[in-house]
Length: 242
Image (tube, rainbow, N blue to C red; front, side):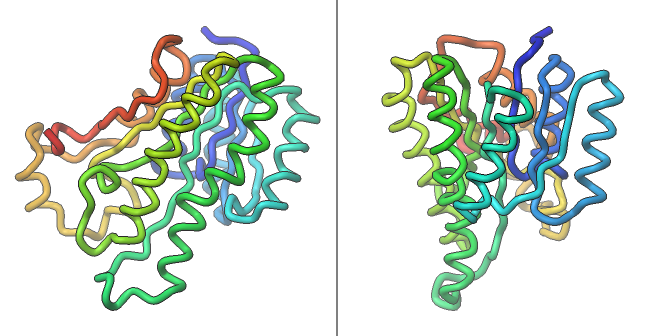
């Protein structure tokens, strides 16, 4: 068990973020559940974690709003005193062919999926530097590794997260802060439930979609189970990018 550690997970009320929160809670980590709007889903995640006799609170704020993030981080420190693990998971899609993609569709995805990592990591990393300890896990995507047609905005944001991960890992290593990324493949969540997946599954060597728990276990490994891995991108995709 890992006691007295505190994790902040963005976009944690549903899907991969929720699975990450529960996986870390099972290891004894207190969890702050960030979410944007679904109060019911966020409370359900909190209730499920508290049923494990682990402390969990929900924290509603827009990760793409710098001032809102800074206020929330200050409140977390006032309440918990520290942040040991940060999982930058919040993300949205606004898919479409680039030639038809309007500026707002581009900016929405870049702001939520990439700029938010700056807004959240900036104040949190300063806390970790003072602690001389911490683990940051960024939720990238195989779309950021090989690109995906119809997702120029999403692929760009996720590729940016990979570069961010590698640069930050070099900057923060001397303070005992590890920075890694997980690159999920196609995972069975609300974000993918309406997509035609039969053709995709045929291309996956393991012949199935991933589950949120598959990603969560990788996040736990990078956040808790290893102390000598940093600057890495772990693809969890059933072999799709082999």
